[in-house]
Amino acid sequence: MSTATDDSRRHRAETLRRAMAGATAITEAALRTAVAARAAGGPPVGDPYDDLARQIGDASYRVTDADVDAVREATGSDKATFEIVMSASIGAGLARWDAAARVIAEVTDAPA
Amino acid sequence: MRLPEVERGDGLRTRMLIRVISLALGARLPDAARVAFYHKGFVGTALGAWTQDAMRGLSEWSVAERELMAAMVANWNSCPFCVGAHRAIAVHGMDKAVADAALADYQTAPISDPLRATLAVLETMTLRPDELQSGHVRAALAAGVTTRQLEDAAAVAAVFNIVTRYANALGFAIPTDAEFDKAAGMMLKRGYA
Image 1 (tube, helix red, strand yellow):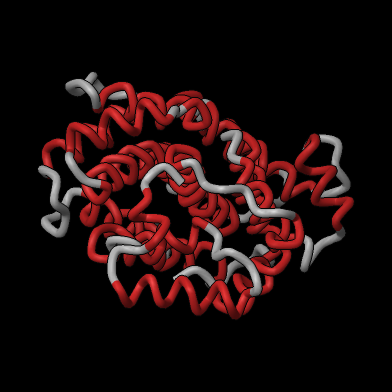
Image 2: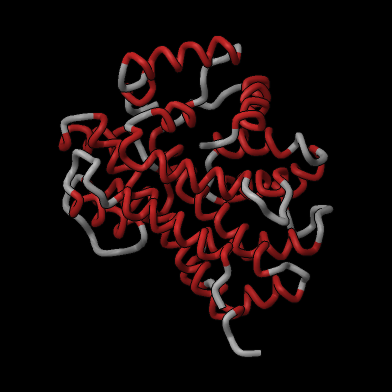
C-alpha cells in the first residue's frame, strides 16, 4: 500500500528525473539521458562522454582533469559540461533510489 | 574546481551573492553552495527541494542521524568534501566520537541497532545496488526500523549518491576543519533549498 510519504519521495525523484531530461538545458536531451543511463550501468555512449559518465557512475573519485577537459572541449562550454556531469551523477543516484524503492515496496506491499 | 564558471558564478548577481556570503561566513563559500547557485534553471531547484526534504523534512530520524548517513554515503563513495561537510553538521547533534566511530566501522560503533541495520541497507544500496534484495529490508525491519525510516534513509542515500559524484567529478576544494565548522552552522540555519 502506498503512503503519503513514499508518494512524496517518488514525486521528488521523478521531478528531478524530468528536470535532468527536460528542455531547460543547452545540451541535447538524448545525450543527457544516455549519459545518465551509462552512469547507471547502461550501454556505452560516444566519446568523449563515455569515459566521464562511466567513471562518475563507478568511481567518481577517479575522475581526472583530462576526463572533464575532454568533455569541455567537445561541448564548448562550462555550462554544457556541467550538464553532463550532473546528468551522470543523477543517473547513478536515481538508479540506486529505484533499486531501494523497489525492494522496500516488495517487502512492505507483500500480503502479511 | 574543474569548471571555472561554476566556481565564480554565472552572472553578476550570483558573483555578488558568492562574495557577500563568503564575507558573512568569514571563509571561502564552499563549492557545494556554488553548484547550488549555478545554472539554476537546470536541475538545481529539483535537487535542492529533494535534498531539503530528505535532510530537514519531517522524519523519525534526527537531523544529526541523517547528516551521519550523508557522511557515510560520502565515505563509501570516497568523497572527502562530503565526509567533512556532513560530519561537521552531524556532530552538532551527536557525540564526535560516535560519528567518527561510525565512519570508521559502523558495525562496531556505539549507535542504535536500527541505525546500524539501516546503514547496512544504505551500504549495499550505494556500493552494490544490483545486490539489494528483500532480505536486506527484512533484516532492517527485524532490527526495529520502520518502513517510513527506511524510505527516509533511502532518500538521503539517493541524494548523496548524486552529490558525492558531482563533488568528486568537479573537484571540489576541501575546506579546513574550521571552515567546515563555519559552513555547518550556516547549513543548520539555512538548510539546503
